[in-house]
Image (cartoon, rainbow, N blue to C red; front, side, top):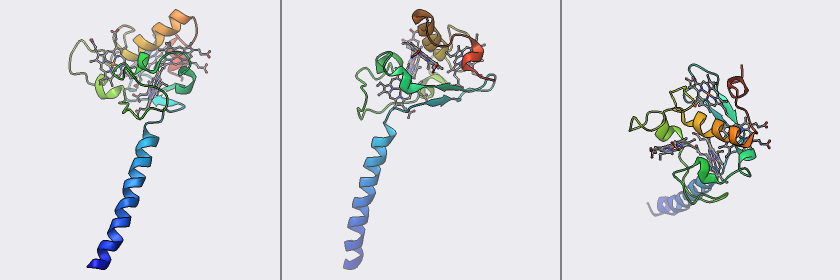
Length: 128
Ligand code: HEC
Ligand code: HEC
Ligand code: HEC
Ligand code: HEC
């Protein structure tokens, strides 16, 4: 019995350590993300995340994480958590294709138009 406890304590300590490390990695901003949660009508979109971190503040896109900074340990929820099947009908839905109702079209295309940089045509994001 005593011998078992002696073994269990270090094993638990190692597991906790691994969990902490994994949590840290999970919060790291990705270099690139494939957005495919609603891709039934158009092809998935590859989003070059890293290239956008110098363009604007994290919170421009992660608008529910007002204080988010590179390397911070804050939990970042995927957009789909709130926008795939929104609670309120007024919240932009990922299942919409309209340029004013789809949250990605709103955010991504509006900025590309404003800055005169980045794709604005359907096929430049939804590659064949
Ligand atoms: C700046 C990039 C970008 C451009 C330009 C763009 N889209 Fe999208 N679109 C996205 C992203 C990102 C999603 C979310 C994809 C997902 O989560 O599956 C999306 C979602 C969609 C969806 C809903 C998802 C689905 O497949 O059912 C449709 C339909 C769609 N787009 C059609 C269009 C059309 C039509 C155009 C041109 C008028 C267009 N898109 C232009 C990025 C873009
Ligand atoms: C131009 C928009 C944009 C900017 C700026 C941006 N992100 Fe993101 N980020 C995204 C999108 C889109 C995703 C993919 C979310 C999804 O899968 O629904 C993402 C995903 C993430 C994820 C992974 C979340 C998950 O799904 O597990 C983390 C962490 C993250 N971003 C952190 C950051 C940090 C930190 C910054 C600032 C240094 C930043 N982002 C800037 C758009 C952006
Ligand atoms: C925790 C939930 C949550 C997450 C995560 C989230 N959103 Fe939202 N978002 C909302 C809600 C709720 C609204 C509607 C706000 C309102 O009507 O005041 C909204 C509104 C928006 C709008 C419309 C803003 C406007 O000016 O009309 C865009 C665009 C948007 N979100 C894009 C995104 C993107 C892209 C991501 C991921 C990077 C994301 N959201 C993550 C909850 C969320
Ligand atoms: C706040 C402004 C802003 C937002 C929001 C934004 N972008 Fe961009 N995007 C840019 C700029 C600026 C560039 C050009 C970067 C460059 O040329 O270095 C760009 C470039 C791109 C490119 C081309 C990258 C390349 O290597 O040619 C893609 C693809 C892209 N954006 C997709 C998206 C998608 C998808 C979203 C929404 C999730 C998004 N962008 C949101 C400003 C933005």
